[in-house]
Length: 439
View (cartoon, rainbow, N blue to C red):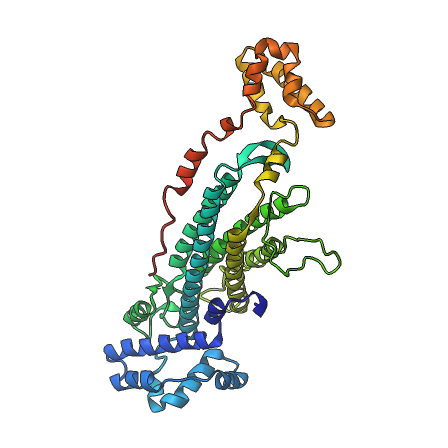
C-alpha cells in the first residue's frame, strides 16, 4: 500500500523487519522444543537465541542468487550462529515458517482493526445519543418516506459495526493457527510437540491438520470479514455524501480553517473524506475474491496463493485500518444541521404523514382502496402544486365524514413516529460489543 494510506503501526506489521523477526522466533522456539525432546543439543538452541541475527539487505542479496526467501534467511542466520546453525529448521519446511508467520501478522493486524472498530463505535454511540430525538425525514428510494431521527440513523450504523466487530473477533480466532508439521503435513520428521510449543509461544493454537500449508478457508473467512466491514464503511460514507448535497445540507464533513474544496471554485465544500472512504472500501473488498480462490490448491500444496497474499494481505489490512481511522474522525467532527433536517422534513407540506391518515380512514370504516385513493389524490395534488396536505384533506367532505378535521390535525404529530425511539436505543445499546479475546 502506498504511504499516503499507511498508518505507522499497521505498516510496521508488514515491514520486512517484523516478518524476519517472526521467522527468527519461529525457528528459535522450534529449536527450544527440539532440544527439550533431545533431538538437537541444548547448547545449539541457546546459540540460536544468543547469536541469531539477520540483515535485510543481506537476505535480499542471497535471495537474488538462491531464488528462495526462506533459504536466504536461514543462510544469513547461519552466518551469525556458526556451526550450531545446522540444527536450525530440523524437520521443517518453508511453509511452516511462512504460514505461521502470516498467522501472527494477521492476528496483529486484526488487533489494530478491532481497535479501529472500537473507536468508530464510540463515535457513533456518542453522536447517536446527541441526536437521539433530532427529527429528519426518512427516505426510501431517495424519496421522502416517513419521519425518523438522525440518532436512529447513527444507531443503525452502530449496530452494524458492532456486528462487524464480532465477525472480526471470530475471524481473528480462526486465523491464529500454527503449522509446524513438515513436508505434506505428516510430522514425519518433526514431533507435534514442537508445533504445540511454538504455537504457545506465539499466541497461536496448533492447526489440527495441515497439508504442509494452513488451510486457506481460514484466510478466506478472515478477508471476507474485512470485506463486510469495508462495505459498512461505505454504507456510512454514502449516507454522509447524500446528506451533504447542496440541496439537502443536513450534515457535512468538518471543513477546517484553510481547507480548500476546489482549485477553480472557491465556494466548494466537497465530501472528500467520505468519497475517499468509498474508494478505500473497494480496495478492501477486492481482496475477498482472490482469498476465496486461494482455497483450492493442488493436492497437498502449491504456491498459487503465495504471490496473491503477499499483495492483498498488507493492502487490505492497511487500507481498512486507514479507513476506520478516517471514518471515526469524520463521525467525531461531523457537522449536523437540525434546522435543515426539519425544513426538509416539512418541505412537502406534510406528505410524510400520509400513512397515518390512510390507517385512520380504514379504522373509521372506509375500504382500504377508497381510503388509499382519497389520500393519494390529495397527496399528488400537494406534490404538484405545493401547499398544505392537511388543509386539502380537511376540505374533503368524504374524508371529513370519517375523520373530523381536528382529529386529522392530530395525525400530523411527529411525536407519534418517535414513540419507540427509546425502545430501539435500548435494544441497540443494551450491551457493549464483546471485547476481543487474544489467544
